[in-house]
Image 1 (cartoon, one colour):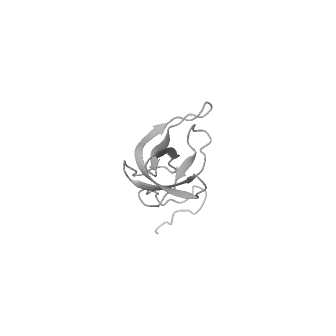
Image 2 (cartoon, rainbow, N blue to C red):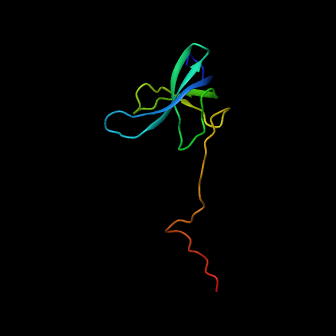
Length: 102
């Protein structure tokens, strides 16, 4: 990161990779071009996203422990990286009871 807390970059490729030995999943990562000639692989945190090629993103230094080669992460909510959150309202199984109409 060259002593910078954040950097801007352009997405060149979005793909999935598998983590190291004891874990098994598909981790979402993106190859990002910084300053025209430097490239880095960054992790995409969260469940769903709409990141595409040539989108502008901000990255910061954060290592994904189980994914080899991933030493940076993309900042969600900045420029082109927007998380898609789909949450349904639901009461807890052990919390409030449903109101009955008499």
